[in-house]
Image 1 (cartoon, rainbow, N blue to C red):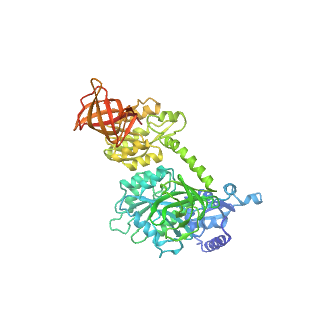
Image 2 (image 1 turned 135 degrees about the horizontal axis):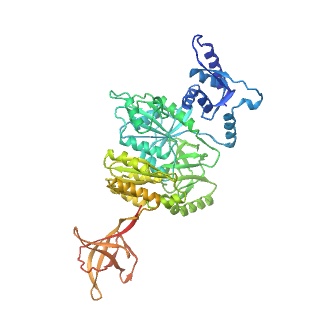
Length: 614
């Protein structure tokens, strides 16, 4: 229920509203119970709950969609929307008549979640390069700094909080959707709301589309900030049209995506943007228990020359205090000091609060989980358990590929095959996407999560890791860095130049009939520095391993300049007089190749193997 003071203000407003009504104007009459939830009121009035929450916030009432409000408060909102509210009379009197059914359910739910309190939303700003993400963050910060610390020196700790009408909002200061998804790839889902910045004079661009797909894959609500409305060529309606074409229909066009026109340069629309963020946060009903031992996620880390290992943690639940024993990743320590984003020392950090922490001996990784424990014994036990689970988690992260998707469907582990589609030209995307998604069945849904033109890049790989997706390319390839990351992380890559073959392979994969394909993996290189005789006819290459490694079961190519003179398998691998299984970079060895004796000093040996492709 709302506070008595706010009720009084709402009641006065209701009385004034009824006294100021014009006699000649007709309004729709509705009957409302003595108390009802925001959701019920929106359904009765047939308006968006967002509109109702906005009006409540403006009246000083912070309410979420399940909040129960009294009749007079509801009457004010109804009148503001053109309705005349009348109190519904019930036949039976008693305490049960005071609440609607939804209100009673809301009250019961509140009893079951004792200890959970509202927490500030965590917001990430994403969008195309040069559309004003950084300037918007600066404008928000300078306009709404927590505790009026405008004169403080901003510390770059990766996040900061602002104050809006007595409510806090946490902003993650990340470079973009790549960092957002890289954190998700490590299991850290820290963002509650995404602000998509689109320049009014430039419109929807490739990185805008990528940001939309990354936010959708994370299941995070999107608020659109149409920036640069002050520029002469600004055309917000064109931006809204382009967003509608990719499935983001804004509210004033009949959709459910909140959009706000802003100018970061002139600081226009900042308050409206923050108000809408609070509305979306209320709809999300964000809560946490501040009284339990703290947990959080590392969002930035560094080794400071004077202070040692420092990391920024975003507290997700509980309260972090100076002196707490903490486990972070595979390290532990005690919180010696904490600093906020203005460099001020703080003694505690509540849910959704970012703080820089001093207390570890080693620098953790971004995305590591921080957990408060009772003592050193508990910390070492947790670290040992985490170490044991690392290989298991890594294996789980690599489970979805075209070659094993049927097994995953059969075991009930996969209900959706998510695909990243990369093509050479834009015109190929829609027909391929349609053909692939038509393969959906009752057992599994096929969905193209992200599609764009060009080679597969590292951003695609990170999205695939974070959301368990496979990557399919048509008339395109992979950037070297992306290919290496995909191999290391076990991401499934498939490339085609005929659409029919692509669709046929996916269809076969879903039925468990896909024939495995093999890809070549280069393990290392060696240089022949001497040639020796072994036995009557066999020659052995005295070699130095220049990179990678060689194993006894490796395949090998003998290269003389750019010419391949032989390809075969290794028959012997020795260090001094001993047979060995493997020789790595920087060591010498003797290598025999089955069926080849024509080694020359200076020949390059390329060691490789064939692996099943996903």
